[in-house]
Amino acid sequence: MRFDIPLEHWLDLSTGINPHAWPVATLPAAVWGRLPEEGDGLESAAARYYGAPCPLPLAGSQAAIQSLPTLRAPCRVGVPRVGYREHAHAWCRAGHQVVELVDSDPGRWLDDGPERLDCLVVINPNNPTGRCWPIATLLDWHARLAARGGWLIVDEAFMDATPEASLTPFAGRPGLILLRSLGKFFGLAGARVGFLFAESALRARLLSWLGPWTLSGPSRAIARQALADTVWQQVTRAALPLAADRLAELLRRYGLAPMGGTALFQWVLTDEADRIQANLARQGILVRRFIRPPSLRFGLPGDERDWRRLEMALTAVAHA
Image 1: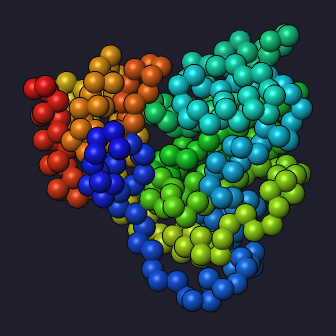
Image 2: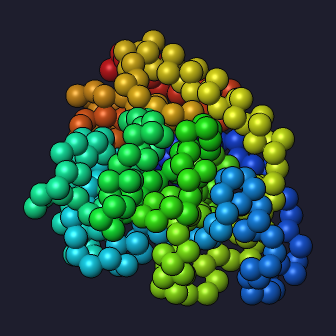
Image 3: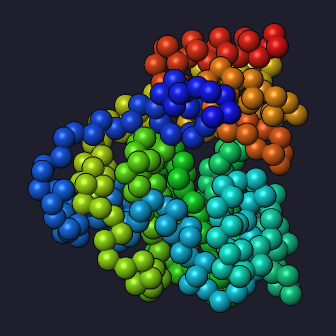
C-alpha cells in the first residue's frame, strides 16, 4: 500500500455518501433463499417516495449509465465537462460522439445545424460542483431535444436532500430519462439500488437488455423498507444541510473555501489539490481529487471523533 495504513484505519471522505446510513434491520432468512420477486412492493414504495409511476429498479444508477448508450444508434451526446466521468465513458465506448459542455449548459448545441446534439446528459445537482439547474430550464432543453427524437438524461443521484428540485413529477414524457440512487442520501451504496424513470417503451427496451433479476432479493427488501421510512427521511433532510454548512465553515477556516457543493459534500477549487490530498492521505484521510480543474471533494465526517480528526489533519496541512 502506498501509505501503509490498514483499511480499517482510514477515514473515507471521498464518496459523498451519507455517513449516517439508514439503519438496516436483520432480514428474514427466507429472503436469502428465494429468487427476487417483483410483487414484493418495492416498485410501489419507490413510486410513492419519488412521486412518479413505473420506476424501473436497477443495480444502482450505474446500470442505466452503462446500458442506455447501447439503445441508440451512434449520435452526438453532450456531457458535463466537470462531472461523473462514467457518463462520458459509457457513451464513448458505445461509439457515440461526445461533446463536453461547461457544466452541462448546451447553449448553441441545441439549435438546428450539423453540430446539434441528439442527447444531453445533465447531472443535477452536479457531482462535484453542486450546480443545480432550474426545472424550467431543464424542461426547455427536454422539449427541444424531444421534438426531434432526442433524449435528456438527468442523473439525480444527489437529489434526495432537495426533492423539490427533481424532475420526477414530469417522469414518463417521451425523451425524458431520470436516474435515481439509494447510495448517497440513504447511505446504502453497498446494496446497489437505483431506479430509472422513462416512457414505457424505453423502460421495456432497457429491461429486455438487462434481463431478469436486476436486483437481489435482500437489496429489494432493504430498499423497500428505506423508501417507506418517512420519519428517517425527514430527520435526515433536516440534519444533512447543517452538517454541510459545518463542513464548509471548517474548510473556510483553513483557506479552502468551497466553490460549490450539496448537502452531502463540499467542492474546493485549488491549485494545490494534489499536495493537499497526499498530505491528508498520509494521515489516513481520503478525499476525492479532480485533475480538470484542480479541485477536491470533501464528504461529510460521521461522528465527532471524525470531525476532530479532519480538523487536526487540516491543521497539519496548513503548517506543512
